[in-house]
Length: 354
Image 1: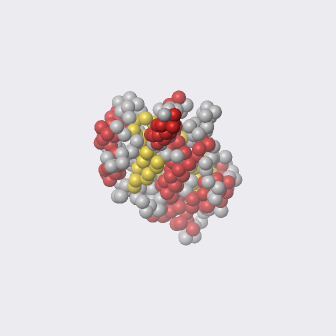
Image 2 (image 1 turned 120 degrees about the vertical axis):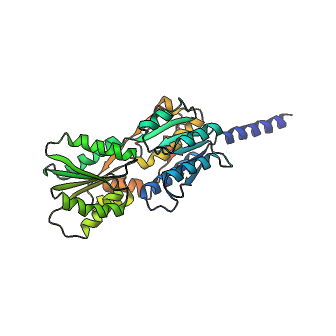
Image 3 (image 1 turned 90 degrees about the vertical axis):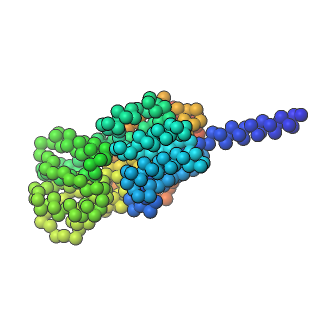
């Protein structure tokens, strides 16, 4: 009889353990074969995190890479035969409501990362755990701060000696990141008497558009000294143009994202600054979800919404940051999980950023 009870307890213990392994899907807004280093890094780190902590992680890609196909991809993932417990998504204007309704209907919990919720969308879906109880959390990069940090880094790169004007290459009209990063730039430049923004234009997060826009900005606004870019991809396009054309003056160029190629450019002095770290959000969300699934609610520490910090990479720390993100040493995401570290009182999402 004792042997039978022993095996029953073993079976029950095994069942309980299995039940506590969450199935977490990350829905990438980009294609599987993307050349965008930001989403490559985001996916890579999400996979590493779910593997480290012991969650069942899966990445589903948006085949067309646009907001309409992305909405369909989210809905299809929610209706997957295996049925995810949690789905990590970003938001895009006019493309999220259907996904929220479908997730509520299917009993799937949602976690939003890497995007702000603005305007009518905010009125429609509200805040986590209010109208949609299954929307459990929201990590959003502090894009406003990022725009200002980049401007300050670029000005410091000139040793604060250059007075001059900024030209800005922004992302897209529909992107909350574009809106907030540009506003951060504008407000920061208000603090500097010798610097001002003379022109901003949309570059669609594209290297090609960066190359195309650089000569237009330079010819139309010869007083430009600083070329601020809302992404490292567009900054790369600008630098491609500058490197292949002999010009009468040099320019200070900066971007946002901490792409692998950008950090290399920062290390060799071609790009003055890169601001980033936010591609860790999907990985951090996976850790928070895993702990939540195991009865440790991140709301008690981080709240329902959490602003992810950005960090500056320049000539002084570029090599160190590059090695910590893209070097041979790998992160151990268990170190920031409260399930795996019972004595951990507060999340330290700056653990990897020295």
